[in-house]
Image (cartoon, rainbow, N blue to C red; front, side, top):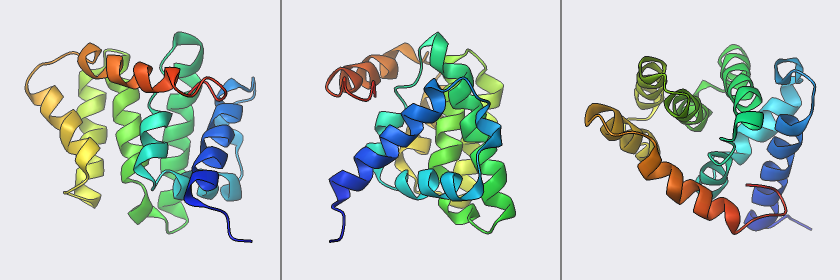
Length: 151
């Protein structure tokens, strides 16, 4: 039986949740796990739900995961699938108050896919000098709809 899009989405979020909540360093993940996450994040809803890992106890591991996944994908031929990862990295920088790092990550996402909507939205937020609170409210509201995975 072929998994549904929803089942794949839930599997991706559950995997990300487990990685972020685990005490192990996400940079030690194997390529197969990284590629599962990367492919799962091509689904915009999964990507949006992954943006919800912004609480202080999650943000560090989330940022390590996004940057490690970008590095692994770039060395294994998956660069074309990384706009979501770059956008999530940008979001992590933005939430942490690191606007310069956010801008670099957003530009990396847009260099791969200039039409990537979430990257364009974050780019607008950065260019307009907005703070992440405007978008964070929506992200956390969505997280509250999915308490089972905390995202």
